[in-house]
Image 1 (tube, protein in one colour):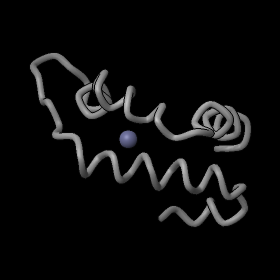
Image 2 (image 1 turned 90 degrees about the vertical axis):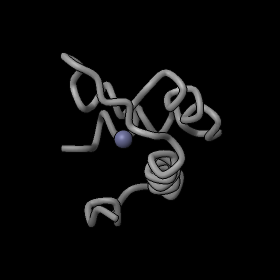
Image 3 (image 1 turned 60 degrees about the horizontal axis):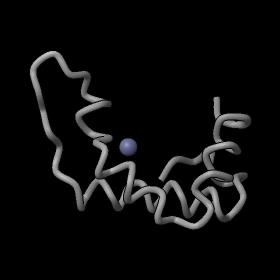
Amino acid sequence: MNKGLDRAPRFVAEYVLFHELLHAKHDVLYGRGKSLRRAVHTAGFKKDEWLYAHSREAEEWLKRNWR
Ligand SMILES: [Zn+2]
């Protein structure tokens, strides 16, 4: 896992771990003209991501603190 997360709150570190685990669950849908990021984070992926209770707070924290 990324070293910078050492100083992240626990719920943020858990969110990132959850996100990584979802990558193991979801297949990558490569498509012509699609960016890799979009192919990886599909609608189904995003939907699962919201199953993590603190996903919104974690996203906010990452936006503010992640460089
Ligand atoms: Zn991802």
